[in-house]
Length: 299
Image 1 (cartoon, rainbow, N blue to C red):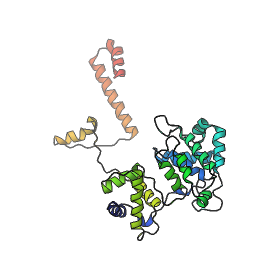
Image 2: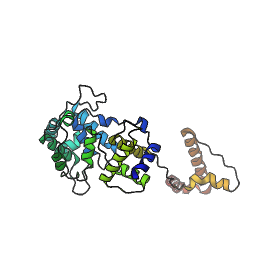
Image 3: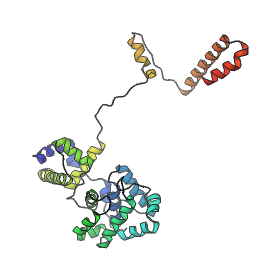
Image 4: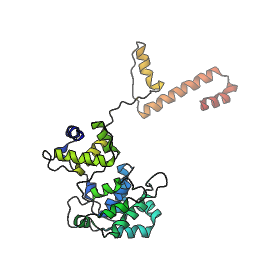
């Protein structure tokens, strides 16, 4: 029942006929998938994009390979490990990634450190490139070891890594996706339950949308939720000076507002100041001018 109602919602709110993945799903090399998967958890995605770009810029590397040409997939996991170890965790966070986020606010490690630990596990099992994953897949032991890295226990980062490296069967049910499911079905979902209902939804929609995958549906939902405009009306309070036209018109008078140029505004201030100074001179004898001058300046 949930998958049926979700199908209707997806067709009405998402452009499934022309849905496409973002460039982040076409990274040039596997290390960028690790960086993105780790830094994206609990962060705005624009900051994650900047981290990947900073790393590529620092080492003069190509970031994307959207055409999947033969020049890609050359930067290996071992090379990234060597770069981070040579620079050190702190300097990598400061000068290379330019990001000091931690895997959690309480006792979390630097995400730069998590990237290094993630990479070492892949290296241990001989996974160096995107082609390695295509040819050999990811052993179960890899996932188990990655989940033991501080901040990786939820499995979201690992799922997202799999998606970035080419796995069409995975979803990353983050807060955007879970909120969408809640809004459309009225139910709360765990990460695994969300994965299952997305998979069932794709199976129901597959005949109508042959190119739809779990990964593409997950991204389409995320993109919709991340960029939709908030329809909630926001209440604001005007300052009294901004309500002057309303107050005048409420008394039945006509109010004409005029936008002044900088020059005209300064001229108006000069005239106002001159008028004030003349009234002070008229009201005060000569001997009180020094005091009056200070009073005018302070006001």
